[in-house]
Image (cartoon, rainbow, N blue to C red):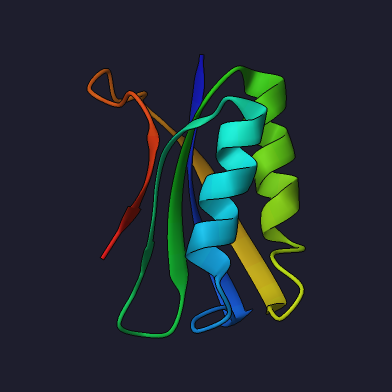
Length: 90
């Protein structure tokens, strides 16, 4: 089990980034959450099989078609045993 917390910068709000991240995470079988931050970044918590979490982080560099990602900073964190799905947090 691996958990990672990532911050995505660029044009990543208002372009369906959170919904696309949820869809991609669910396809990968990754649990966690995604939310917009007041400073314009998107924060992502991804947890699951290490290879699939890595695939999720790689996808963050791409995002949905309308996004323009300029950076992704991620760090491994302690897994959250309370997570069961991948959610969009408002």
